[in-house]
Length: 601
Image (cartoon, rainbow, N blue to C red; front, side):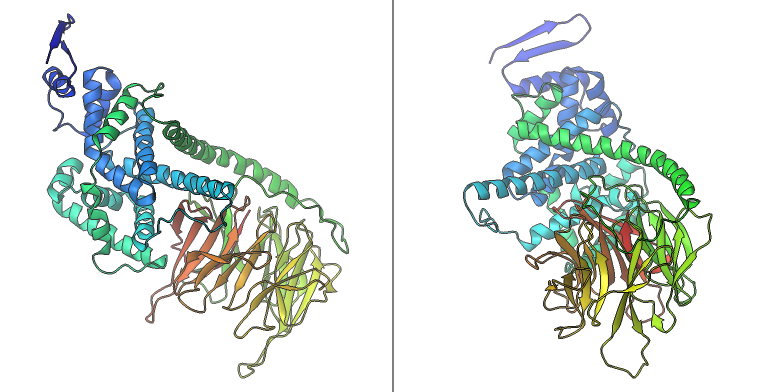
């Protein structure tokens, strides 16, 4: 085979030939072997030079981390072609970030997180594409391509999502040892940690994974986590895929002809999400500062005039899932039935107590400025901005305040279902009186709602109330929708024991908690007409309730895991779930012994 050498005058001999092996051999003579170099050194070589050194450095990174990245993509995605597209897009994100990325020890955990994000986006895009193709072909909505969604596939996908959410000190050894197949000694050298530290943190990471998978309703027999992860290091990257990925990296900015348009779209989509998340966190700080001024001003304004019945114009749901998620929390060591209202930023997970001393199930107004809650046999309202005294708007003496206050869409009225307090020996059905009251305490009106029903929510267009009723319920409750005047009653659910229900922002779906059996326990979504019920979050034996994000695309659930016997404090957590099968984000609530009734405002 013919070769040609050219002296460039800088001491480096360029070797031109038709053999890829000889080109690599020439680069090795020029820059030295790369096997012993760290990820940071390889990335530095790639950024600094666009010649053979850059190609070899990036090829070494693909060889080192490619099997793990491809394994993640294959696990999350059903189609092999989609998996290869996500693989290439992941490394192109690395190319884009190479100049600003600070590599402390290894790129493995960072690439794993990017791969999970890219593959999840590709999974959603593929699902939309299949639905479009099915509709175009005249198939039924439930048609699939015949590829079964196995239990292992779902478990593996969720496993990678949970690995990405592990604390860094546990995530790094799990990625290096379990996903990339490195020995404890190799990981120890790469990280600069003692071997014992690597072993103990890996074991703790695995234990957390098993616990989180169990919380999500997935069976995890002994050894299953390690069995699933051990295959990652054995995933072979086809030479063609690795080669085109390296060539696309070298042609950064002009990858056309090397990778497909779908790969470029996945890369650009992932970069937009990463940039948007970064700037949204910064913008949210400024927005909250401005909102606090507005809230303070709003707190000193006079209460709106009483209106007998609101006229509400249906508003389109917000497209921004920003704001805060508010929930009630019984604090550890606090008095029984003494709760606080806590706000958590869905992006930064920062938690702030905004109100102390309420009783149970407070509800935040639609504009996020006011909270209604029960305490001392009365219904109270108070500004979340603080600086004012709570205002009693309804006397609850002789009734239970355990039912949630429900805000009208415009936040000017509250509906609450009251029940006479029952003696412990009274096993008869609950009987409720549903009243509407203005937020200034005027115009108390009893609504003609069935006495077996408790009102749980009010639709955003003001036309419908959502109730839980003991009518026609074999056990517990069933859900109904009806007009505020009690007319046009429609039963939505049948079976189970649904409660803690909410309308979606567009009013087309309902969200509720069920929990009669292991097959039903969790958070469910059903159509307004009662069709297509599906569980979006399994909670096992935990107590849970949930709410919609402002754009109706995500659900926030507060979950309380109660210990089986003993004196341990219940563990509380917040779980944010994407309805389209994307990321589930979990945040612990360490100061809460109980939590319920979230509102995302």
